[in-house]
Length: 492
Ligand SMILES: CCCCCCCCCCCCCC(=O)SCCNC(=O)CCNC(=O)[C@H](O)C(C)(C)COP(=O)(O)OP(=O)(O)OC[C@H]1O[C@@H](n2cnc3c(N)ncnc32)[C@H](O)[C@@H]1OP(=O)(O)O
Image 1: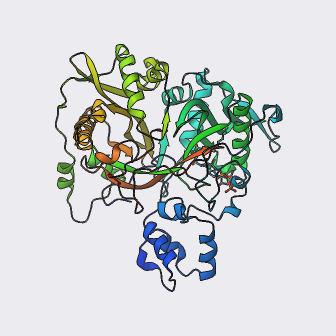
Image 2 (image 1 turned 90 degrees about the vertical axis):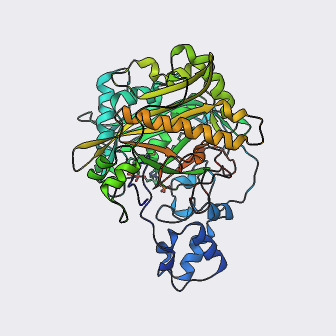
Image 3 (image 1 turned 90 degrees about the horizontal axis):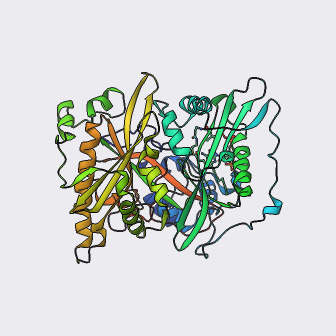
């Protein structure tokens, strides 16, 4: 948790409060030291643990796991054998030796895919949620708004709006059968959900037709009953039926085995509101007035030629986006139609606006664009909401500069653009601006006064092996400006 901000339920769960390295007694050894250096939060975990137990815990980790300091131990990670479900799935295991060539982990055989779902326990039934029906979208909204991701202290919960769900789950090419629900047979109440949407990904040099899995949610009363694996297997079956054998998903907890890990950062826009809702603490060395001044922003943007993106910009933005994305290892390959959907708010057909995109036009040429989307979080005890802007996709021609100072130029340009994004978000009444350490974000987070959150977001690929992709942080979870990130997929 940063001194400055106590992030809300940042996407997919939270890290926990940091523990001190000094808490560890009795244990020595170069590997333990190395592990703790990379992941200080393990110190508390190991406190008072039998050396043998520590040895056992470390057996399941390879050097990559240790050095990332993310895909290792802590509250989040169990030893491989305890992942009773994930152990049976085509995902890379902890402790497996690298490097191996990139490729699938399981053979694809359409003939072996079951045509009906596994039976659910008595009293429950499968359903395909029809998102063309507003009433059913409302049901998903109700389930998520009461039971989806919360922070560790259950102070904040994501509040994905109905408009957001329309946008997120009906992307071009969406498949109704991938919106999987579980209902109570007698009342038809929706009690669990998982979704997939089709996406073409490039993972290093391979292009994969994937499903992007999201919104896995089980009613609180049905937790701990091994329903999640049943839902995951069902959505897998439905994807396989469409000959889709790979998936991408992000989760706040460690599962076997992340292909990358990014960290959340938060930039206060309305510090006082964040303080009053319990989101941001008042640092001991500061005052309320100082905090407000620290995060004050000018009234007007500064970039010449900055304006909202319009439909006429689609081809130019698509072209710039595609070229910019070639610089990363894990990226979505969007068609023009997908760019329109994701950046122009699905053609603005929803009740509420979800995404804002701005372009910079210079003598008729689009040189840059950036976008952010709205995702509210409920302040559970206060019946209030925090309006959070999440940095989405962006690109800049500056990235293609041939100058020896190219990186510096990109840094200057991105700082100017993101500063304007903050000003616009503030004008739109957002309370906080969130970003991960992916894309080129490492170049501007500190300068734009983003504070480190305690949440990490782990990226996973189903049925695909590839070596670890840098997530924009070093082995101490600090921003890594030098290496940056290879991750170019922003998950909602
Ligand atoms: C080709 C196509 C492939 C498509 C599929 C690709 C894979 C997609 C994978 C899904 C991507 C989702 C992306 C998102 O939406 S991430 C957002 C997840 N949702 C939430 O956090 C909302 C609040 N929490 C809940 O609703 C429940 O706690 C959930 C549903 C998370 C677990 O329910 P419950 O707490 O009642 O647990 P259980 O007793 O049924 O099951 C326990 C087993 O489930 C494993 N578990 C726990 N949490 C997660 C998790 N977030 N991803 C994957 N696995 C998870 C756990 O390690 C254990 O397995 P193992 O340790 O024994 O092995």
